Image 1 (cartoon, each protein chain N blue to C red):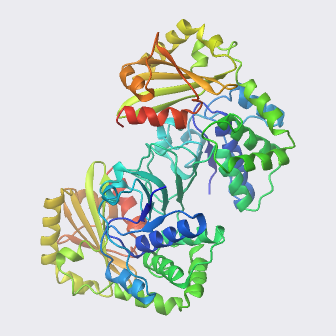
Image 2 (tube, each protein chain N blue to C red; image 1 turned 90 degrees about the vertical axis):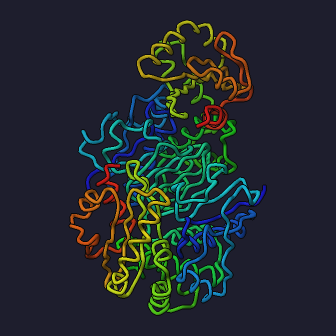
Image 3 (cartoon, each protein chain N blue to C red; image 1 turned 180 degrees about the horizontal axis):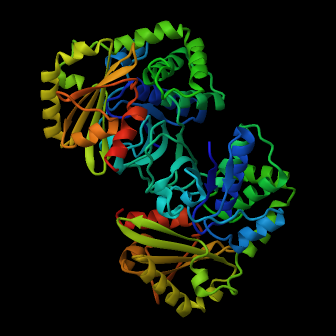
Length: 311
Length: 311
């Protein structure tokens, strides 16, 4: 059997990176398969912090499976094809390890698919490693822990599953870190927005969703001060408008998330602002509005948009 | 939480019935949820044989989840919405336990999804029961065994997974039956086609697949003598033509499967016979052709049709 590529979604975040890295480790160690974890884009600053902390070289970036001579892939932390590798339609999806809704996903053959409504794909990888009787090395456990912390904002997001705190405690033990201290340092590493251009900022963690045939881009940035981001509104809006034109997005919804107080400011532009306002029952003023308590794109933004767009 | 309905696909076969029955048992026993197994149609003769043998009353037949006052459902042995309950779009899919390809399936929220490329959904239910530390009663084990035997033609179909023989042996032990003897009796119970009208015959085990926007009906009947079925060709073709007109199928592909020798005769009618012939590299004569070694719709028919239809 030729090599299997394992990767998370485009614009890889820490969970996408960690879950792919951990699952490829399991494929090799537990099941003896020739699997390599790769990335569909450069790691962000938070992810780079985790990689550096645990002494892991970032997986290489690939843009085509076929160009790698690969015919079989495994997806982690995503299933929607438009979030996946560009030539996903030309290869066989052997397995999916994910914690998102299912959409725009189809196969010709039966596959292994393990989705659980838990806080991170990394949580699932850890559970699978326990079931397989694999003892994780410190750096794999550390990355999986980072994926879980990142996706749940240190277990504070409503996406946190009842089983996640125990998973975090066990992974922190193996990784030899203090959960709270390491977690806050990891999250803060991802809030350094000042060094980023507006174009970079709106692409740090962005995904496209097909909502009733509208390609809606939903991006999220983490910060410790929403106001610091909003002073750059004009520059950010220009970048959003350019991205919409270049990529044909009908709408662009940017979550500016305060990781300390667990709220988000929503900045939105596009053709369906009535539907965006209806989704969150708020009124956009100067293109933005406050969404108290919202930190999760997956649980507090995408389902509401899906409903409102009538998808 | 209100009641959760658990069901397999329309035209329930033994695996659809057994996996729903077993998973609902797990939901109640292992996780304390109020789950009821139901059927989307009357059990076929093979399934009724298994129910009778293990003294289980057939689950009741329902046609609408909403009419039952239910808002959450669990799907077993299928995921494609057109194979599910009529109002599947109006309820939340909490979980899917399946061993088929994924298509025409979408959710607004994350869910529990457990798909494995194994011989039956019943195999997965059994594995989950072991993981949950649940000891299955004889009749639940017996039904799960029946689901596995039915879907793999007593472990002879190419859909049989390397792990299935061990699953079958363990289930036969709990159920207190001889695998070979019980298995052959079960399969033979499903081959009594003489008592069926042509309309009933083409609907015993039939599923619709959307292949590149063509609704293609793929049905299968088991027999110990293909010739016995083919003598009814004129009557069967009339029933197929009527079903295509009534339901808008573009094509109808009937597998007449010899369970003793593991071959199938394909009888096909419709608008895309060139694609059907290309799929199997054969020529239909008088609307039918022999497919040596083919017993599995999932592995030896649907992927080939999917490829040929360019879906």
